[in-house]
Amino acid sequence: MTSLTNTALPSSADAVIVGAGINGLAVAYELAKLGVRNVVVIEKGYVGSGSTGRCGGGIRQQWTTEENVRLARESVELYENLTSELGYQTFFRRGGYLMVTETEEHRAAMREAVALQNRCGVESEFLEPDRCLDIVPDLNIARIKGASFCAGDGTAYPFSVVWGYARAADRRRVKIFSQTRVTGIECDGGRITAVGTDRGRIATPIVVNCAGPWARALAAKVGLDLPNRQERHEIMVSESLKPCLEPMVISLSNGIYFSQSMRGEIVGGIGDPEEPGWEDPARFDTRSQLRFAVRFARALCDLYPAARPLRMMRQWAGMYDVTPDHRPILGGVPGLDGYFQICGFSGHGFMLAPIAGKRMARHIATGEPDDIVTSLSLARFERGDLQTDAFVVG
Ligand SMILES: Cc1cc2nc3c(=O)[nH]c(=O)nc-3n(C[C@H](O)[C@H](O)[C@H](O)COP(=O)(O)OP(=O)(O)OC[C@H]3O[C@@H](n4cnc5c(N)ncnc54)[C@H](O)[C@@H]3O)c2cc1C
Image 1: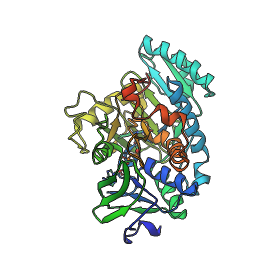
Image 2: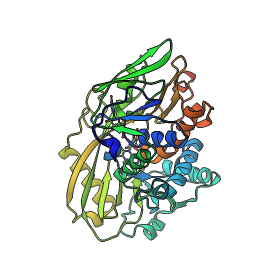
Image 3: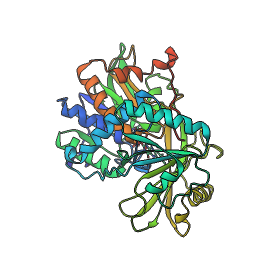
Image 4: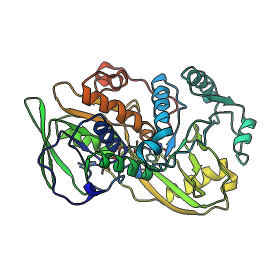
């Protein structure tokens, strides 16, 4: 991949994408595919070094708002063909998602959500607790009040997906510069004119903020105050087991999620809103904590007792980029021509990025409005058009 070497930065580009996570690379690839030439991606670390390379790889269509169900469905359709589209094995696998709950309130919400999902063409089903055992025989259903299952949901391997996008973008002449930091964004008369980096300046009429948890800091460089905040999340991987767990399991009650990778490892995490500094914006702390290991192990062994003999091999942390309604921010900003953003995905940016990148690329390249991009624009916070999905798990 020649453009990932340390060649000199170009002095100009037709579009500069900030961030080589899944969103930055998806939009870069889609822009190039639409015929936009001279697309440059700038990454301060390495490809996938932000949230993407730290995520659980879960991809689900079981949501409670029509917008999320529709977006997730379109994204899954893209994931289905991504390996052949990118010419790179993404390890996308439809193992299904089993969502469980311990409350009557969620049980009722699940029934309603399944009806909505079915109306949107997603083949999910509501399950009584004992039916969960057909899907995960070792599940502890003692406290489960209800569940929903969608066989069409699944997982992919995050690094393979970003490498796949990076290689496919590279073949379309996108230039990806890693270990390069965007230090400033220049505008003149309400238009983007250039991006400053620690390796030189690139004149450009378009900049796309795909900086993940750093999106707010980047937006501040053009005077924008995004409402995003950062949340610390830990995740772990165990030693390998023979294949025993087909779907991703997720609990709406305590937020635990876990699946089995193709190498046999159990991969999973759990949010911890009580953790000191959990949403401290100044604290990009990705160190591992014993607190997580204990909390996760207890919750895992409780819901999935078969995991009791397992040893954890590794744990790590990453940041969610969270907006007040847990929906991403897409699109441009009035009065600042050429500035676009694709950020604020909370814990579901990996699953939505293929469709977000595709829709945003079309919007940027053609200038045509896109209904989802309009609905998810920054202006919604001024309009007060906030709708939170009840199945956001933190
Ligand atoms: C523990 C954990 C588990 C998760 N599990 C899931 C899951 O199962 N399913 C799911 O859908 N989502 C999950 N997510 C969320 C998902 O990872 C993110 O929503 C998604 O990866 C965001 O992708 P991105 O490309 O927008 O951001 P990122 O991957 O963070 O990429 C942004 C990039 O921008 C770069 N950057 C920032 N500032 C600059 C700058 N000034 N100059 C140059 N480069 C810069 C960063 O280095 C980074 O590489 C999880 C997240 C975490 C932390």
